[in-house]
Amino acid sequence: MKYLIAGLGNIGTEYELTRHNIGFLVLDRLIDKFDGKFEHDRLAYVADFKHKGRAIHLIKPTTYMNLSGKAVNYWMKELKISKENVLVVTDDIALPFGKLRMRAKGSNAGHNGLKNIEQILGGNDYARLRFGVGNDFAKGKQVDFVLSNFDQDQMANITERIDKACEMILSFCSIGIERTMNFYNE
Image (cartoon, rainbow, N blue to C red):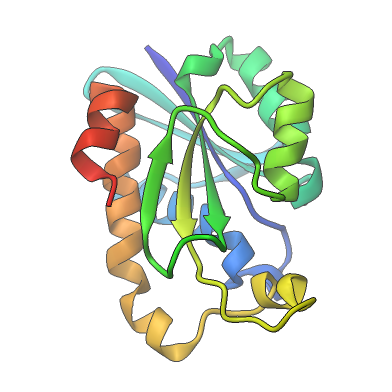
């Protein structure tokens, strides 16, 4: 069994610790747990490891957030991985900071990365792990908020939440989405 886990974010040091880059941060932590490392390849930084007899492929698209679908589609085809075995890790302003929610499909909720994936894959029937980043911003300041760094209080708690997201990813790959949602969704 092969799985593709796509962590969404933007490349570049100016985006490294921003809320929009939580997908990258989760995948960085996950590959560290398996003593692996990302290497630059076509449209993404890629890494892989084995877990419970499954081949898990990680990608961090280098296409910037708004064109994430290009990288997801390319690597699905390249690795011959079906949509049922794809999981997208993304930020979500509709959830309070640190809240984690996995879904088998769903709305893009105005998220440009998810919108692009939906367009290119031809639907919203792919799994996603939404990582709550909160919504503490004034009207019209959403872009500034998601492209800003986590605050000090959030940074103090982020490692525990990222570790929980990593557990959820491994669970998705080993026991499936339904059981993972029942066990982990808060």
